[in-house]
Every structure is written in structure tokens, then in C-alpha cells.
Image 1 (cartoon, one colour):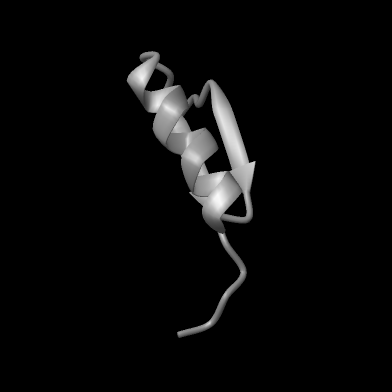
Image 2 (spheres, rainbow, N blue to C red):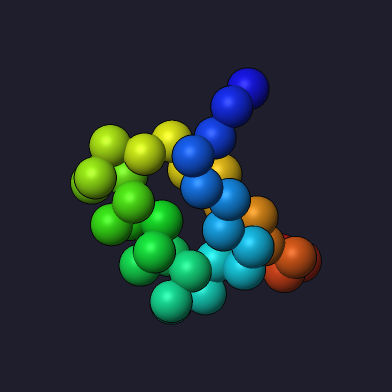
Length: 36
């Protein structure tokens, strides 16, 4: 699969970056290392 943007760390800033990128029509992959 091909992505336009890969966000490493989906805290508040990473989540906002992913949100605005998808609103702009980009395909986004978000990766976070947190454990549940």
C-alpha cells in the first residue's frame, strides 16, 4: 500500500497532522508505540 504521509507518534500533534492531511485528501498511516 502507498501512503502520502506517515505520522510516527499519534499524540495530540500527530493526530492533528493526520486529521488535516486526510482533510486535504492525502492517504495517511499513523503509527504509535503506546501499549494499551
